[in-house]
Amino acid sequence: MKEAINGPNCLDPNICKGDCCSIKIDVPKKLAKEYVKRGCARKEDFIRSDVFAFHLRIDVKNTIKCFLFDKSINGCRVHDTGIKPPQCWIYPTDFSNPENKEISCKKAAGWKIIDQKKAKEAEKLLQKYVFLCQLEAKKELKNVNKRIGKQSSKNLKNKINNLKKELKKIAPSQLGGFKDGWDFFTILSAQGLSLQMKKFCFKSNKECKFFPDDFLGCKSICDIVANRLIKLLQENILNYIKEKGADTDGEYPLYKLFKFIKKKEN
Image 1 (cartoon, rainbow, N blue to C red):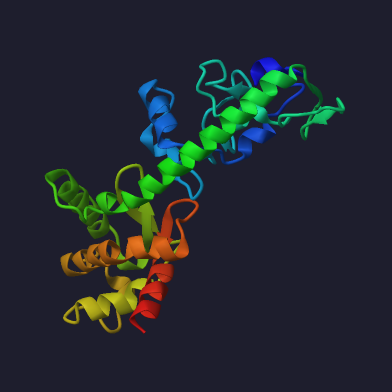
Image 2 (image 1 turned 45 degrees about the vertical axis):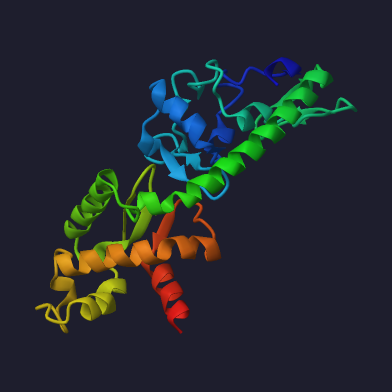
């Protein structure tokens, strides 16, 4: 596609501010692994997606753009590596412009397709890429039981132990839910204080000294409640995903899980 188009120099900061780099770009795990292998990324740079396996993390603290955006070059750090996401190569031209109309993005105009044959070849390759990415994403969803340690092995049991340690480090009022990561689940912190766990804690451990009046005084999820939370996740997350679909960011808030389980029990 690069050879099929001609246009402004996007690396020139006077022309482009990298607005398109603020879009969440979906990638397969195979491509994500290549970024990690080449030192362009860490596993934490990939967020679970409901389209392909992952999407690229947005650097909200610094650039408000894809983490691959490099301020020093005003562009993508993998631009010349051969592994830039294909969706990024297409923008803003698409694949055809038989009337040779002016093609523009939000900031600049002047792109032209100069080789229709190569553009068509690129379109066919992208269609194949999307098909294979979607197949891979379905396989990744089926592996959710591995990521929650439901299937027995030493490695998977370690994942559960790690999740349990994370749970026991926080107060029940600070737990917002769970997050599906690269190869294991982690906790999702609540926005401020949450009462979602209050009833669950009481049902799980009626001997808790913080009930009924001092739920917010509990500073650490106990062993009993941590075990029950993990069991809840293992028994319900796959069915939840099958019925509700995968979350865009791989985040599963407690209020959604509890609502789903209650509905299933009724």
